[in-house]
Length: 259
Image (cartoon, rainbow, N blue to C red):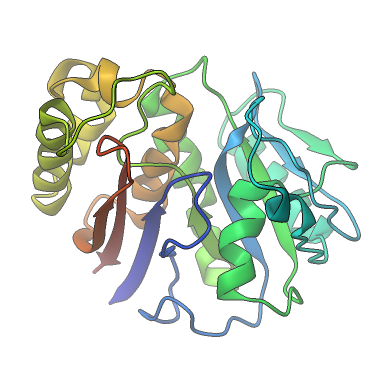
């Protein structure tokens, strides 16, 4: 039995749990002796790109939004993982992905550094990021995950960063959880728990209110990567659930167990 975890967590909120895929341990913060490869939602490209540096700088990009000053003092100077980046490129190319590139300058932004500061504050485990392709679809990202699945056997910890719901920033706020958000989140949980992963790939025709929940699909696609990497026979378990203060942005962490 192989235990795999995946995180859906808000991109801009630091103090939320991240869950991971691994074939070594079901514990969220268990120590790993190998690299980490991260799927996150703020590096957007037309083709897959992995970062390959010796030491990761911290990137302070918040999509044009200004956050409290202390956030700009946080750093996560983890070493890079050039060998892992090369392996990612090799796996994706062998699986038929075109134009898989390496970026030898890009560091880590908040969607990567913020959770890892809490999980591995020593910043001593090499990290490689892989970009999201928002112009492509969920099936593309599912297939990315399938191509990356062998990394688990090498002791690589695969982390996905996105959000169960991520409405537009100008979406209306509610005193209680937005009904449309509850409906989408309930669909997502039920679909994952029942193993209907094809429906998650087809969310644009299967999910209620998906245009409100994910007007920017890059916040959802890391989930498809996780499912692809976990395998078709995996079992999903919700291990964390909470709503952000605007009552429409949902944090959800799912653990996938592959038998």
